[in-house]
Image (cartoon, rainbow, N blue to C red; front, side):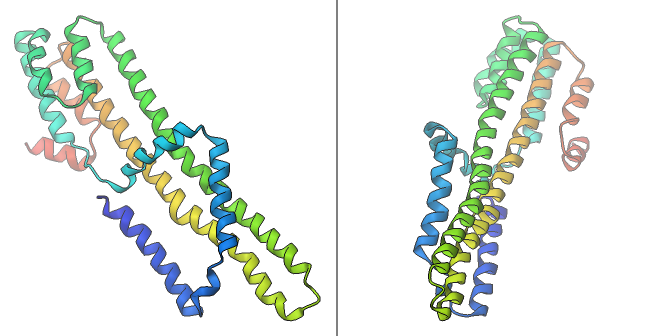
Length: 255
């Protein structure tokens, strides 16, 4: 589990709830019609914006915001260096027997293309297309949450306008104006909470996860191409290091 995401959302809600409790009765912040307008409107607009299969698919993508799988640069580096030494010693065909131990289909595909005799340009083009397709899938998930972050405050404002209209129709009762204004503003409050405490943070975390995965795929691709081209171990090492964070580079140098 990604503790940062969980702690961040929990801390945000705790601070908001604490502020509500310190200001008086929490029940004044709960209004079913306002909640239905804000949440229902945002969900409905999002369903109109995106095809239903993509919205259903985002439920699988959103798990990446709450699950943390560290990017294992060291393991990929070690595997690439081993294969690089083997390919330089015995030829690129010698690495075919090692492909089954790889769980990542991207690496297996790249090395299989190299073993099959494809040129580096062809391999790079195919792998680049795989990365681009992955980025498009990730971008869809991010876009859905960003769209909900835009629609929730908008429908919150619509709910506020509805409440103001209903309140102004009752101007004959001055005592109800204050409570009517408070009820009208609750939908704006709901929209701001949904957008800034849920949707935008999740979209940002998914974007970070996508960037990490793209960097890892880039490292894999450069390693495959360097081995396919018969580069020296030092050259392979330098290419792989360029994709690593500084702290990981120090670990590689130390080893």
